[in-house]
Length: 350
Image 1 (cartoon, rainbow, N blue to C red):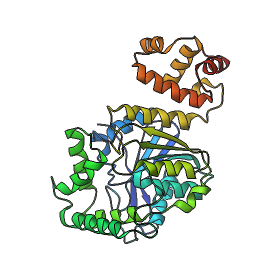
Image 2: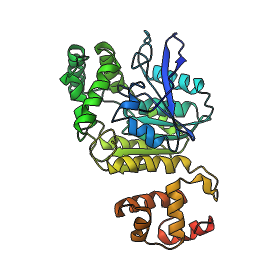
Image 3: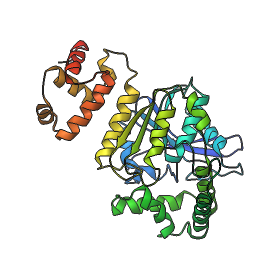
Image 4: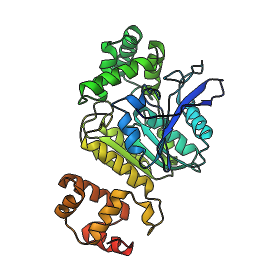
């Protein structure tokens, strides 16, 4: 199990937000999303691989929103303002003047609002399975209202019991292709995160969020990632985000799991895309700005190796080589292999 030191950032109400950090590199702050628990993450088969893999390239910071996990509760109404306040509190407590933001699912709106309000602090914004507005934003339909009311009532009556089918109701859409161990772990983490009243309040808050007004004000480089068959947040939400944020890149990941899991090709694609995107700010020609895999690829590309030879030398499957090269071409700003060879040699590789 990963060792971690948990710290507590104070809020205006007097409550404290629990946060932790792993890894080395540029700071990447993950906004709170559905049912986090920083104390459980290092032993979770769902989240521990995230800490290990992203910790290679970033100082990954994460926290529990008020009243969840290890964070203290207060009586402040849950809304976008409270979510942004928590982000600000953790960033300040960690001493981060500049940082990259990761907004997953319901954590996306808070990350978007923070980036729009603090352009001087946010270097990059990454959105995964996120949305600009929930089904109850604006003028909701009678069907959406009824669905939320029924789901919230189900939470109030059945949440918090070990082995409860209520937690599994959410897990079945969050990771429909998860292993039994991953499913059980996510069920248990949801149960441990908070009680039924808080869980129901969080659901009502998430589905009413609306940050469409902030999208034109996001000025930092933005990467939008979304699963092709996401059962929790429909893929068109990701495409709408990418279309509304100036210069945003959109990457569609294969699969149904809302949360990419270790062992899925999409998990490595997600991590590689985030690393290439955030580290792209390194000075051109500075070899240290590339990851170890990118440097190896650059040397082989510059030497004129084809995909089969690259796969043999690095021990990678052909599809993995193609995906890695595609991300590398994006980072280099080239259209294909001939331009990549020239650019790699200009940078001193090969």
